[in-house]
Image (cartoon, rainbow, N blue to C red; front, side):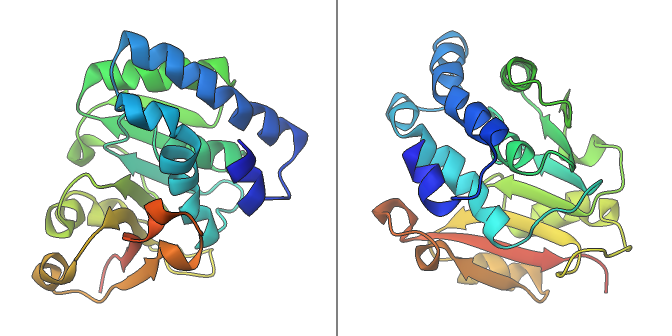
Amino acid sequence: MEIIKKYFPKLTPTQKDKFGQLGELYAYWNAQINVISRQDVENLYERHVLHSLSIAKIVQFREFASILDVGTGGGFPGIPLAIMFPEAEFHLVDSIGKKIKVVEEVAKALDLTNVRAEHCRAEQADGDYDFVVTRAVARMTSLYSWVHNKISRNHVHPIRNGILALKGGDLDEEMAELKRKYRIFELYELFDEEFFETKKIVYVTAGS
């Protein structure tokens, strides 16, 4: 939890409380339904919570913003972002039902009324979203084909609506396949920890 306060020192007491509960909640639910590795449970705040919150360093989701989290797994990046931005709406989807059960239980325990969890594929998600967030779910060409027509053309944030994908490693070949303009944010520029040395956020806008 201290690592979250290190990079986000202006958290409200409610946010601190909810972030503080994540460790125990995921330890419990991961023992019932394996959604993250045992090693990562021990490093939950760095490798999952802070990693998810890197998106909050790129864009501050506004009140009533609508965000789709594709392939959320156990709720990342959607759950930490929902705590950070309680006035925004988050739709977390995954094709594996037992993972969505974990998301539902964690959101319920934290009283995250701005989270809707659904067992479905990205293509089946219904809605008009400001941003699509995801973490290492698929190559960008596939991801873009699934969601580009779900991204609203009404832009109310400092950056245009689009996809914010958490990825790692060498992305040159993958991004060349997409044949679209993109921007990469290197997470080692945001966070000191060694885990983030090869981590990135890929930002792609939808439409023309």
